[in-house]
Length: 323
Image (cartoon, rainbow, N blue to C red; front, side, top):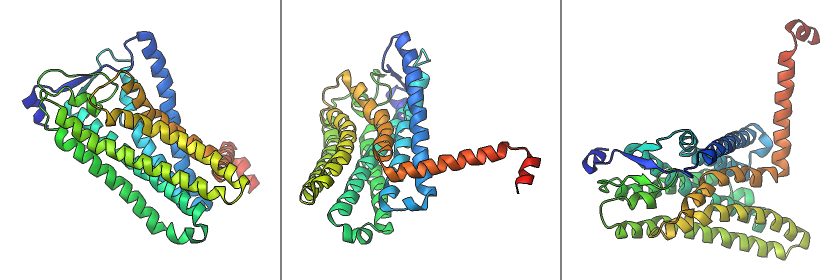
């Protein structure tokens, strides 16, 4: 990080979401609640998937990994954003800014591939049910998760390869609540045209290609179900409509921001909230609360916890008499 000293910029100023004091207090309370719900909701999913043997299947294995990625994705910038709502000077060090760029592309790149893996799992389950357990073996699921993290790591390292060496010699105000790559590169003291082309080639193509694969897989699933029965079609459409909603909310802002990084808009930082905060809270709702098996497993865990708590509250003498 000696580059920070050579460039003359040791920290960046984050403008956040609003300069209004009243709005910042509201945002502090609102996003604090959202963040707690994201962490607890996704932790509950991970706990449920790992502790209930009836959920030890490929679909729930991938879902548990998605919940872990969602917690990571919501945590790379949200806690600092929440703290900044109460701070007059919203600054981040050069190293902290680079770290945020690293983590946002690691987690978003990984989640894109993981969502494709989950769509592939549903495709195999619906279109090739007799070969499902053979195709979606534990080894296959593990490989898919490793691939998602590998793609995320390669993606973010390729972004950092040209970001850390940019010369920052003066302007250091980032009009966002975290260090977003298109906005940070525009602060560099050089013509950023080539850098913006690299962003389009890297982030833009990754977003568009994974989004296209997802949409294609959903279309194939719907067409396959269409020829089976109208009842199955209605059920599949209901499920996939919710999945497609989450995919659009996640990929839409990513594509808008990173396919056209040449021009930044005030709405960009609002769109960034969708894939950093709203998607991690929607995934548990879409993929869990609409799933009968997950709801039953969660009820068992909650009931077991409450029962254990009640037993622990009984005096020791009374407990001994029960046994």
